[in-house]
Image (cartoon, rainbow, N blue to C red; front, side):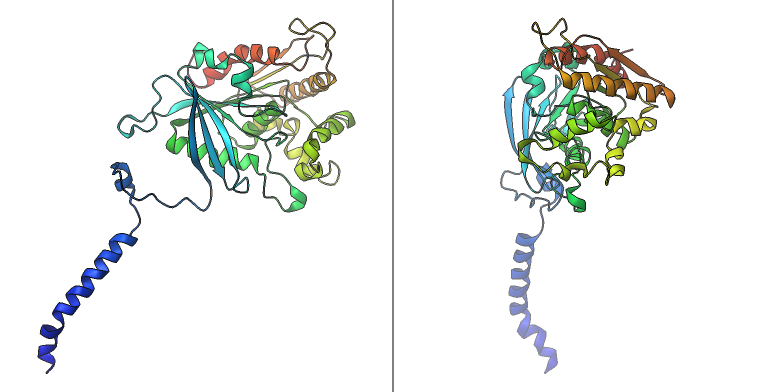
Length: 345
């Protein structure tokens, strides 16, 4: 009796196996090879449950591309990142994919990812035609930090977004190489110093123009940055906490207290003194620039004390907190920045 069972069940078993094969084909995950083959109807992999993903791409001008990036570090929000692309950039050509040396340009408080291209001639700068320039959104007053949020952390985590999520995304899919430098103005100047110091080896050089270089310098400096923290009806204690009770957190975000971590890479510091300068309208003054001037002098002295090997300063005297100076200082610092990328000299 049992000898006849396979013969009787074989048509049924064949149908079962056929159904299982179809189900497995439908449910099987899409392989990288299938996606790389460019099959027009190949199913897309589900979005990652962590990290960042590009959800839209917009060509805004010649060599200028805006990426809309959804970020886990920012609570699932979508923010923009502007790329100024080098000549010949084509990250989607898998046969000839090139990874480009990268300049990160960080915006200041009250600005955004468009600030550098709208306020300076960076897009017309010939020396940047063979460099990928990354200009990420950092929030109106994000301060390039993972906010303390009363010890809970979480959204926003700008530092994690930039140095982990966005970096990996750009290097995986958008032609960014591992050869990087970073520069920024004001809040972004502090960010450029912080990222270089807090992530050793990530950036080969850093430049800060009118940067918040030592926010713990004195009560005036502390009160001023707390005022920025409170912008747009924000609870200022969410950012780094109280400057006394959470002093260690403040120190860990103060470039002066991180000077030893900057001593082995090229550092460029520049600032005016807050009085009317050659690029200002008559009568212009800036208490903010005067404060940042004192902070930058303090950081420069500390860098020298700890044995910084490649420190360049341009404390140019008269000059306010204004774009005309930051554009000029970007150009002045480019030889150092590009030299660290191996592009000159």
